[in-house]
Image: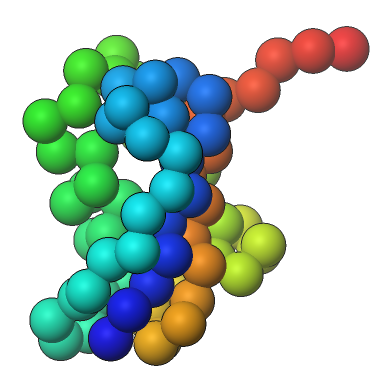
Length: 78
């Protein structure tokens, strides 16, 4: 199964890429994929990175072929 992973902000900087298509073996939840993607990256607070699957914030979704997963760092502004 293939999913598209999009990286934003400091996550994209740490990963040195903005997007990739990943071939997954077996079923993963969005949270499991997040852990896999962030493993080894120099990000201070990995728990603060949010996950959106098909533009909906949700880390418990079981991923399906063709899903788009976005890894979103904390945003600030006002």
